[in-house]
Length: 609
Ligand code: AMP
Image 1 (cartoon, protein in one colour):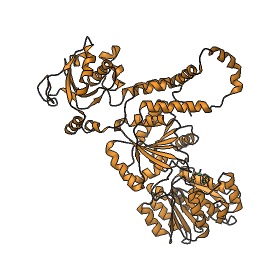
Image 2 (tube, rainbow, N blue to C red):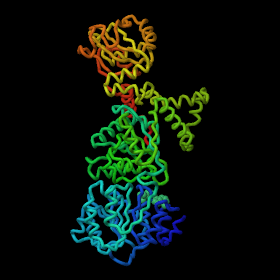
Image 3 (cartoon, protein in one colour):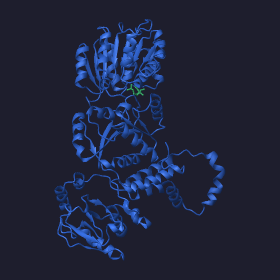
Image 4 (tube, protein in one colour):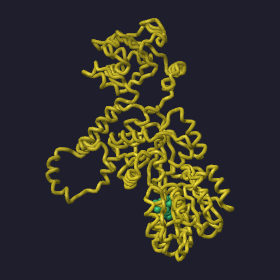
């Protein structure tokens, strides 16, 4: 189908032709003929970004009498940004018509809008609060409107505009034709439709409540405390990401954005503590892709309309399925593919099931990529960029002879290795010792602190044996330092360490039976530290004969994983300095400082896009 077949006026066809609209989008194919040919009201279930502004805008412009100086159409929208955007779209569509469109919204000096209203427009695009203000001042009269559009009606209700909408509806004539657009169909919308709309038709684009089919939904399961590291992995795995990271609170939004910026990403925050001018600036920077990642709260992101996001990241899952629908509906627009990613912890799997049920969509659990996978992805992204880079012959050629001469002794593969290393060593370094961020079932006990369950899980992996080391707290040992020592001495990170007890002179800890030989043999070569199998029955301490948790001795129930992150802490002069290991990965933190210094050195860790 073409726009011409939809019987739109030539002036409109010319204008949208100039905008590059060749074929109507699905919502336009359904709504335009309906509005032009039928005389009833309409409820259209469609996501933002599906082309709905043209779907209602083109038929309304087609039908308006530009010679009549009366407000004939009113479009209500939830936010000032959407209001401005709709108004601009309508102005563009009506470039060759003589129809006047005026937006009225809160947050702008009312005098400017009063002036624009002096010359009565045929179409008003408004946010509810400001519109009521102007009606009360007698500046806007809705008694002659033929067309009323409620855009993003569910958002307007979410934002508490229910009473305002009803007040406005009462100001309009019963003869008006009403078109309501909503991404979801909560009961309140159905009630409004029933009360204020006549024999309305319902059109659904895509399945009800389900976002676009272009969006795939994936989730990663990790421990809650590792959320930020997971976010970084996701971003690093997708070098061309252009997306919104949704957080629950302003505070979290600020923190995540600050961390990302500090770590060298093109990110910024959008939240309610910013002034309108600051918000406009951030949104504009994001629109023109100066910012690659926007960290935002749901409320602050409402006004933002960007069609080509590659990803939406749910840093936290929202409580409400409708909020999830709105978030994920921000990607996969205008026929492009998009991904909605959620970072969850294991107890939230039921929430994913709920959303799957409501959306009638399958979510895919993916493993959080390890450092190697991320490096591979980044490497080939860089190679790909190198293949497609525009070579500036003119400016490079004067130096070519000298460069060729200088590098004469290197063959092609050696040359490539050096260039790749130059660009890539920092990345490889950063991810070298990165830990596995996936949540594994056996970690359950550590999350819940339930002995029984943890031991049961452990039993499935094999028996543990208690080992004793001849250094203790007086030598500066604590659990994290112990892991550093084991890591250093064994030389890899395969040893899994269980219950740890540190006394003044000794340190006791559990390891799996099948790893005992490996660790004992490695320590046998050490002069200063002795490691032996402890004389101990399960659950009792050699040193006291009492149950370990009862005697107030230092112990931890966390099954520590001995990853490379501890290595540095123990090495060299650092040994006496203590330093408790925090729950996040010190390897990641360590590399953060590297990453930061890379930025500080003005050699950006990642190419700013
Ligand atoms: P909307 O849902 O109205 O915000 O539209 C989403 C995006 O799609 C906007 O950037 C529109 O300019 C664009 N758009 C709308 N209709 C068409 C069409 N038929 N062909 C190409 N682009 C369109």
